[in-house]
Image 1: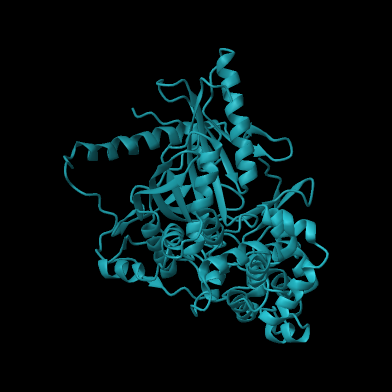
Image 2: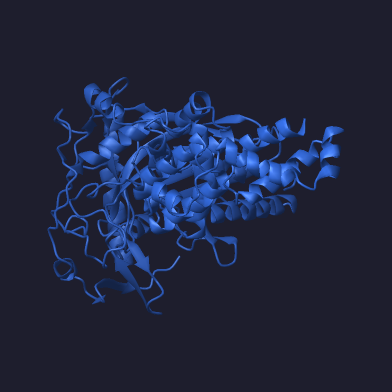
Length: 477
Length: 93
């Protein structure tokens, strides 16, 4: 990036709300169904059909309001945003314009060297449109209205971002928060979270430049690429003496380039006006308070608690809180207070994560094995088995769902801490080692490690290293 | 005379007008707007906009699924359909 240009970026994020039914109709809010099977006459825009609002959407919006530090407005209004498109049979999208449900919030993100506050201008409820499929037939587009009316919360930021890294950091934490509070499933591939990027460039201390909007992206990778491409393009235009046309762009994932959308002969004129089919929404104070009590712990609160209360390393705690399911799994492991949280955390992000990664599993796939994992961790904590043995047993548990206690007995893997037996092994290990014994006595600690290793080998890894270590020191002095 | 761009208005309303009709509508729409513009003479300083004459809040329903119409019903008025999709002239961005 050219150093004397600054990027100025604002984001509009569309989050599909995780509800059973749609925003204004009782059709299922479900991805991946047969074409036009989740559609009723309201969704299809049939004349005379009346929208009836889903209370679940208000609740999810209030939850989001708390989690993103928004002001929750007790009065909001639905308006019609008028435009013609084949996948919007009503001829207008029901959205909120002048009176959105949420205003003035913020999210804190971590950048390379600071915590940065990203201010949010507003968030409003609106309907999603249907889907057009263009690649079935060269002459026709095919329309599936299943997505019509899916509830969206559009979260609009101020232009507070100055790099692609900041944008990705924000989207990551926004997605995490929305998933924690169960407002959105966060599935970007299925389009549950999509972003429009508004980008302009300017010289330091100069006025804001003309911006372009890159529409509708649903992958962190493509958003980063689009920002990098578009900022370079704008800088190039400006440096060669040109000027930026305010434009709506699409990011072409096959070329990695942005290009202007075609339908731009006339600037859009949405002619918003209050929807006469829908009364304004009044939200009572007690309703807001009721929702507040259902929010639960947010990711940043969890992170703090893990670091302060459980003394976890911040990096490890961050991995565990990165997904709600990880945190739930972790908290289940330590819920009986039999295992030190640090021990549970290191096994979770270590061997357990490598196992599920290697087998391409989700953490929920092994949730039924957590009581066995707890037993295993208890044995490690008590020193009944060595780390090395525990690793093997963990795999047996995860793959074959075997009982850890039985495994230990069955395989004769119990750690040997019995002094007499270990003393014998230590004595045997020292036979014929006169040279090394002298080295130790003249101050070489390295030799001790060698002896410990030798003894452990003799016990086939079952010897308790600490006991062996102590015995050796006693013998060698 | 108000500024009515009849070309833009008919484009937004997806109406095709011949020249004669366009001139007629341009004139009558301008007159309507001029008449409605009288409202601007009212002093509305400090008056909140009225979105609805009742002070009631919107009726809400519970978040429950009801399958009310079949795919056949939904597609039954479509001029063209194929494989349970609506089929329309190509629209590509």
